[in-house]
Amino acid sequence: MDKSNVFPGYFIEKPLFQAEKNFRRLLSEQDSCFHTNQISLIFLEKHIEENSLNNEEFIKLLCDKYSISAGNKSWDVTKTMIARSYIVQTYNIQELFFKDFNSEYQVYKGLTSWIKKIREGSSDKNLDPYSQLIENVPKNVSKMFANTPESHVIQYYRLVRNGIVHNSEKSSDKPLDYYKKHIATNSEYFKKYYKFLPEGNLPAPNVPTSLTHNDFFIYSRCLKNLINLIINACDLTVNEIFKFEIANESFQKTMKRHTIDNEKARNKMIDSLSTYFRVKYGDLKSESAMFIDLYLKSLN
Image 1 (cartoon, rainbow, N blue to C red):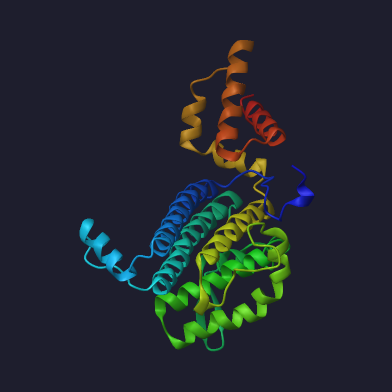
Image 2 (spheres, rainbow, N blue to C red; image 1 turned 135 degrees about the vertical axis):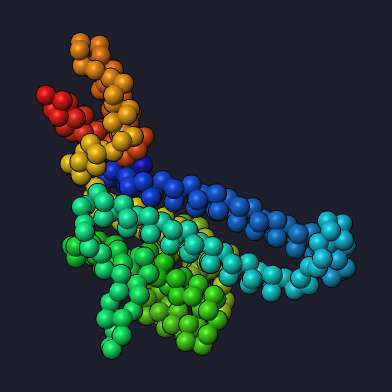
């Protein structure tokens, strides 16, 4: 694939952190469920319209048939509630990833301190997991992802989620202000890189009061691409991986099955090391070769 034609964050070129694998699984499962749900909703709405059915009576009939107590009479309300819930659920996956990633990052990088609060005026402000990452990585690292449109998108939907969950005037004002400052100004970027958007139109991101299924869609895609950018920027090195694995009981247990008594045994060990690295850290041939070389040297 021609990399010049894809958006930033499409490729991961550095060894994987393990939090990213769990994130991919959760996001993939969620995406497929939410898109299926959206298809079902569109199909049902069109079925009622094309067959000139009475919406209220038909929904009541289905509720009785499937033993569901009540169904919403208004599609607009249904769509709004679903769109809002998708944002909340996607943020849950986002927060879980960054909590796990932050812990991993500290272990692999050998960090003994981690900033979780910052001083604002006369009080301390708790930082969300993503903001913690920005605060704790070196500045030359954070600048590679912290001010990207993708970063602005996930920060925007975090504020939208807070407004939905806390339902206060203050929490509702913040996302709209953020939208005007960081989202609306990047509309051309989203049109260029996010191909699902219709030509000449921008169905998402929307302001907090006008959320649709497309908001979940672009949130999910931006989150995935941002995480790829973060993994590349945080640059998990082979030396850091080797140091971690040497102390890792699971790795040691795997390697105890092998010896280097002869060439055949040595080659079998190399194959095992190669597979271990590929499955856990990605199919990166040069990094895998360096890891194998470090391990073999440690046996001498």
